[in-house]
Length: 104
Figure 1: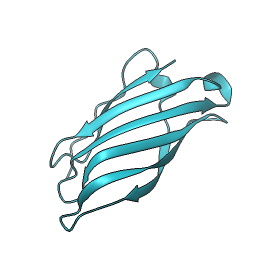
Figure 2: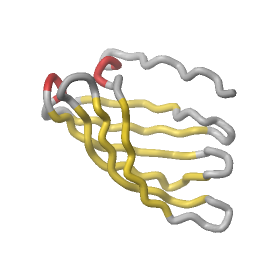
Figure 3: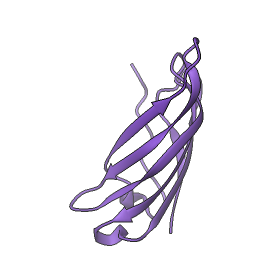
C-alpha cells in the first residue's frame, strides 16, 4: 500500500532508532486542516529516550501533508543531556515524514 521508508543515515543515526509517542493537540477547520502541537517521547533501546515539544503550523488529515518541528533533550545513557532538533515534512499523499535531525 505504501512505499517503504528510507533508512536513517548520517553520523548519529543510531541515536534515533526507536518508537516515538506523540501527544497531540490540533485546531482543525472543517476541511481537516490546521495547526497542531504537543509533546513527544522517543524511546530508544535500554533506558534512553528523547523528550520534548513539537509543533506543526500545517497538518492536513485528508492528504497527510504536514510540516513539523521538534525540540527535545536526551535522558539516560549516551544521549543524557544532549539536544535534539528536528525539521520535517510530508508531501500531499505521502504517509511518511522526511526529516533532518541535529543532535548536539
